[in-house]
Image 1: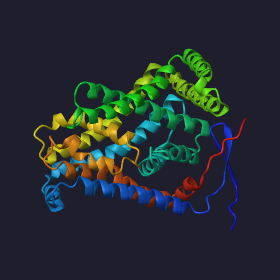
Image 2 (image 1 turned 45 degrees about the horizontal axis):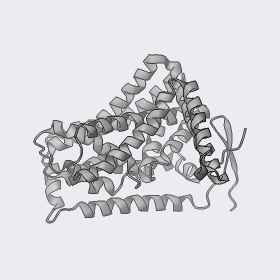
Image 3 (image 1 turned 180 degrees about the vertical axis):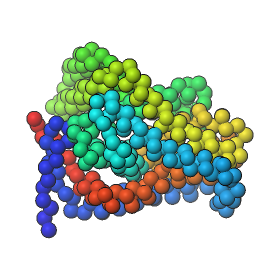
Image 4 (image 1 turned 90 degrees about the vertical axis):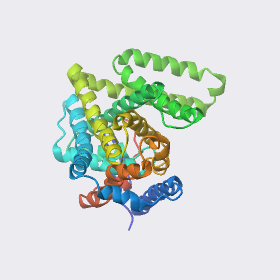
Amino acid sequence: MVATPRRIRFADRPVVTTARRAPWLRLGLLLTAFVAASVAGIVWALPPGHAFAATWRAVGAMPVGGVLLLAGLTLAVVAAEMLRFAVMGRALGVRVGLAAAFDATVANNFFSWITPGAALGEPAAIYMLGRHGLPWDAALLISFGKFATSFAFIMGLGLVLLAAGFGPDVTPWAVGPLAGFVGVGALVIGSFVLGALRPASARRRIDGAEAWLVRRRLLAGPRAAKLVRGLADSARGAVARLAEFRRGGAPGSLAILGSHVCYYAAYVGLLVTLAWLFGADSALRVLPVAVIYLCFTYIAPTPGGSGLAEVSAHAFFGRLVPDALGMVLLFRTLTCYLHVVFGMIYLPLVGALRAILSARPRTSAG
């Protein structure tokens, strides 16, 4: 059977998409890469003589209060993400209902974890918000704004902590690249956020940078010039989108900041609680390292940081937690693996998984 083209609107531009012939093959490849990288990271991180039985005994010996706290924080991670969608919508004057926020959260989590660089996370969230009746341009702004402001916030915080000496327990030459990646991420995305405060000035600077670059000899060719223009257009678009959130004023900006604080507090709270339950001498010492660890998993090139998130357990937490790998595996189970399993069950039930996998956006002019 030949797939029938469908016409969908994302933002204010028509987008023509064609159903993929084998969307489930695409999903299978993504899941295979995610699982393979995770298993490889776990195997690589296993110290000599490590027995998972000891980890499971530690889990079984957890006090009831600790288990309930972990369950509450696991739910708080999802609730905080839903809150972020609602707050971003409110800043734009758009109401994001409970069902829309939940569906967008499930889709965003699922596709963020199984795609490199979380490439499909935000598009999946946009699709789910649009399914619930939000204007496509508002859905795009909400998802993009959440990503940009959130990324700038956590990367900026991670860079400050790295500069203060709270990095992982590895040689300085290994900390350098991590600090570089975090710094570049904070600088690039943070510049868009700051530029949105004065969009006219930011556009002039982007225009000036574009004009300067295209005059360089190395960028004189048509392909290089096209790339420069494309990057400049993307930068101008990013600033314009983020500037839309200024309509909420200072209260709106503070609400957005507060929603990010709640979101990352849930993640860091889980790590600190797990460190305490796994016998850390000082759970508070885990807090800054946990923030940097989150930054590392977000910039890791594998799907959802899989493999690298597990293999780095000892580097980040080995000096703080007796069973660092066991702690990290339980953290990943509560914040990553469960999201992937739940998304695999829930998204097909609401008829969204195939639609998201099949979509291949091609933005037309106009």
